[in-house]
Image (cartoon, rainbow, N blue to C red; front, side, top):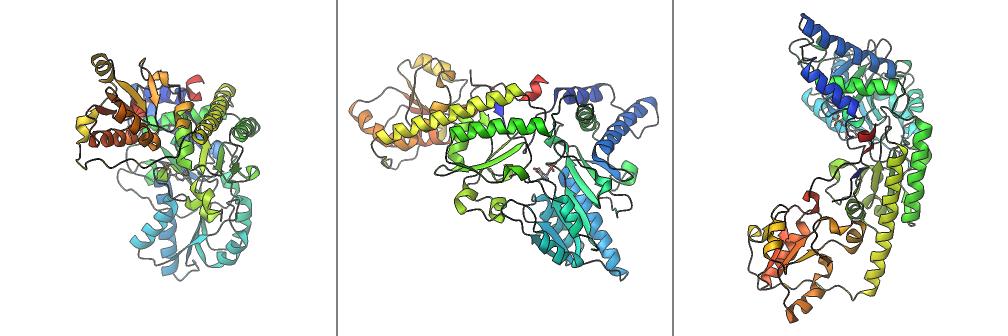
Length: 529
Ligand code: PLP
């Protein structure tokens, strides 16, 4: 059995709350009417739609403003930008003061600057896009904002940052906007359910939200439009959402979002800030004990209580992520969109952090429905990772230096010829009892994950980086069949290829790696609520 997964990447997406999944199921099976139909089935669907919208309006303090259901935050942002830019065009045509700058926080999610550039181009407005710098905490430069607002057409500032958790000073931004003709868009995605918002009490014109960042499924979001703020629909058609967003509504998503909002409104399952801060402190303490050289990339007092972003001197984010992953802890490097790349984080760069911190950041994020046992289990795993890293560095210190792998005779071996999959492995091991399973992950990863899980067969850990050292021994005393595996199948494929090139006929690797070795049972909290 693989260790149960502890999912700590809630800023990328969250599990769906069981009561939200049940509500979606119910909507698909029973409340499946089209809310635009006038018969009873339609009316029941319409009641569900209205109920979810009313709850959202209460929780967000939408007052006389509108709340539209969208497919997610990207569409909500798109609609807001289109609305604002169409209004700027009209104001410009009628000779009114409208500003010429499209300002956006330097750490905004890509959806914002990309939408600004797209609609500025499509509408042929030729307005200037300008990033508003942030300080080392990730907070907007309000002096610059004040200096620029007189000529601003639209200002876009997120309520909280997805990578660092930095909470923006929305009240300060509002003050800086005094007297400006600018419209104001707030990306509220990461604030939903974690920060109190009272939208109608502010001058915010548009606010975007996403269901899948708060225990609802992907494909449902919300756009708040302040009363009297300009509005242009992104999609025209059957007149749904009072003409604001055409297309038959995603009723399963709306039902699920409604169930999440009910849980929140009834104070029954989503923790408040004080409890979340306590959970975060437990994680901070265990990270500090496990990784003594760790530095947090955002001061904790201006970050969301559910996000930690840190770097560890001497440890790349890939290395840390691999160790965490081996221990069943799912965290991310920077934002989800750039997780595959070892590039520096543009968010941390915008904050002016030193290069090494921008390249080695790890983000750990959880949601307001987690409980004490989940946090306790996460802390235990973190301690386990710290111990594995220490043991691995002791091993490395004692081992002879690494050599490069020899090149072999240059012949290429088709990957298919040396690939096994987990389903075929038991049979292979039965027919090749002398076979040796070799885990080519780093020692820290091997030590962080309990290996007996893949098979009853004994497993040897020879990190790919140390394979050359083992070759001399294997040349003297040829091994039986060798089956390499790793986390994703990349390193093991290299190992098997290399051995075949060197003339070891009996080298295989397991495709897909441990990530595909049986379905780990997710132990995220949503299963327990
Ligand atoms: N804004 C922020 C801050 C986000 O974190 C995300 C998602 O990563 C988005 C916008 C886009 O949201 P969606 O996936 O609902 O389009």
